[in-house]
Length: 317
Image 1 (cartoon, rainbow, N blue to C red):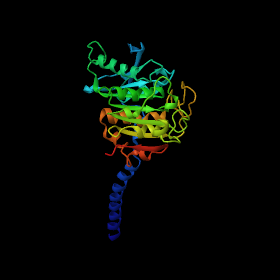
Image 2: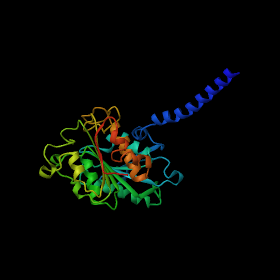
Image 3: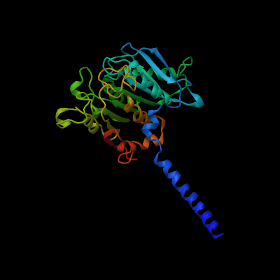
Image 4: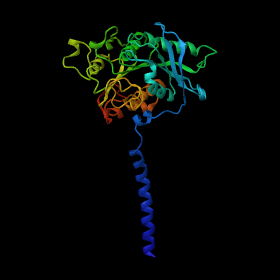
């Protein structure tokens, strides 16, 4: 009888211990923010080339958007995209469709020279007009107070310029592979001009010499020739984050994950430009608390993420 009581006691203790271990184990293997936002989101996506016309430079707009626009009363944020030099939106279709799958309406001018930021601003304003047009599919489906910009290379220059020129329109920017001022010809940018909003700089460690992480001489002496310089020159009133994807070069952002349809060079594909940039927009335009915490200085997930380096942020809480 005593032996039976001991056996029942052992079983009860085992169940109690298991109940303590299992939740802890589940927390330990919880999916990261980057992994979550690297996967397609919950919205089916539609796309239309030359949905509307025209930008100030006469270019049409391509749009990627949730198929079931406005489901559940959703007002979708807008992301205006900027192509790299001589690139077109279709080269970024995997990335732009990915953003739309997370509930954003993504618009891209077909301009191959977006560095001024004009085409990027024009594309956002086009969608805002559609939001007020009764016969438009976007009528009253968009959130005019939640506009972000995202650009690659020259388009990253354009994204920063759009934020600087129109802080009343643009709330936040993601600048991917922002070229050093040495490489700007017709259009340059200077992050010291920013006065509001927020910006996330992301570059690849193998993107040399176009978008280097650091520079040998102080930027105050030779100009903004690196991502660190752009970050440091951004005024304190602007929320800012910078991180480098290890092993990524200038055109990995283009095409599909296997580099299909990307311009040379492309090494590992678009993955580094999916998770955290999407999370940034989820934070800034959709007020996603979990996404926000990933960017908090010192403790956020990005600050310690594998495959990343140079993580720094002014976001403190």
